Length: 542
Image (cartoon, rainbow, N blue to C red; front, side, top):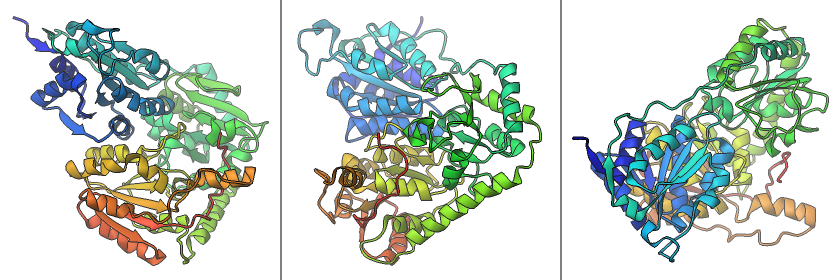
């Protein structure tokens, strides 16, 4: 006789078949069937204090592992609390599955507890959104959602299950969930030749690469192309670390020169969004020729001289072979490298100050010199995290996480949970602005309960700095931009069972950070920083 299982067991079976290792969740009656199925079948449950953390943790898992992270949330407010993470995953191309509870079919439209039709809300920020209306549809629906999430262009999917459907049962499908379909079309040979000629003949070429290269698992191909064509590389998003900062072609802090003076720009797996000045001057010269390598033409608003849409990994490999041994371009490489060293020197000068309150650059510099090469660094905040993104030079790919272009605060605790689970033997360091810390502070209880030691370094300047400084500069005043200075966030974490220290002197940052690393529990180093220290912003705020 074919085996019959409850709906929650069927969903769990589909998740396990696909390789899901953790289900991030918050208990709610509408998803009890799934929680029971997960517990009975041995799927790890990581329960949190807010649904946004569950969904951010699932997205963090996908960013770190390139697997599809999965969150389960209850109906109505549980789903709406996860919307920001879905929107962030949509902007980041993160493969993510959110499974939502739903009010019973038997009382649909009558005003059940937490009744809401979720699909119209989530459809614009997911690749697939559907409701399971019968137990026999549960396994194939979840299997399909996982497959779609991991098929380029990768991204989030959503499935919800009415509470009474969880009470039903169905037979286990004979055909198990297979590997995700990752096939993408091969690069057009004509466009490969055209792009290779542009790169060979350029005097000042550069590549700007982003998260799409990471999702395509194409870091090795990118490195080969950079060295074959002698391309300085500006690395954005999850592409950070694909060239080490010791490489002469690494242009992380020299992007003003590398992009602003380039005559050919290879745009690989990254949108020309606000972070890159929308691809316009002064960030990229109006006369520069663009070569695109991406899954498709989504988010593209400037024409390309050559376009290689489809399989990013195959396109970069084909380009590396077609370019052959490019010209030396020693003068151009040296020009970009000199700009990198100049930026490093200026940042060191910012970080050298010894006054109180502490300059945020000093905080970042003190922590950076104590990081292992494979440390996972997470940024959750505004100006403080802008200093982190500028000064932390990732030495390996997949080790720097931030909210991405959607810019949602509150990712920190969720990403940290995922990082400690994915890499239990590495340092996991979360840089939090004091404002951002408030979005997910209670999930330090989650970190404590699940015994996930991470270190959170708070830049505590008592203001919403990303808003206050430009608002005051542009409008002559700053409204609703202040917090209470010097709040003892370290004591909050201590009360939740973690380790906390307040730091007010620059020379105490390093020792406090080292003690936090050794604490063996989730830890906060709460550093009082200078509210007048403004990040030297060049990217657009909107």
